[in-house]
Image (cartoon, rainbow, N blue to C red; front, side):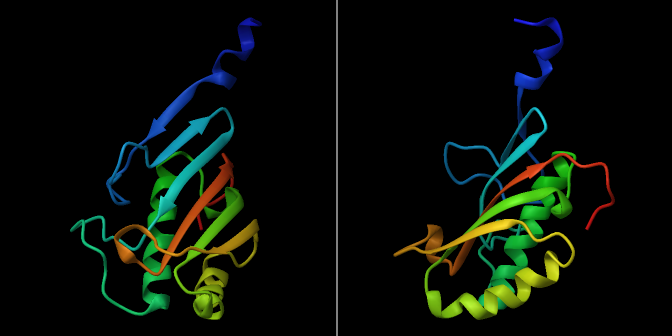
Length: 140
């Protein structure tokens, strides 16, 4: 193996108190070289560990704040996100989720897939996972 490439293949576990702790055998995120893989975030308040109360907009806002927390702990931001996957318990919520999502991704819109799932962890309405690159720009 080339001496200078070892760091590019290192896997670093990302853990932060600014997002909910994992509720299973997985990490909040993994940084592998210049890429960050963020596990699916659900609307749990990291301070209490409880699912937040509220409509799908409120849930989506909390999910994206959790996502931001993991990204920042990994050395990037929402601007570094290149791909997201949104899981919805009800596709009828697509428009409302889009409205909140657009507030967080104003200038840098990542590629995305949205899928309706028959059931999400803790019976929440939305879960979002992301892949990002480590950026040198400002935080969003």
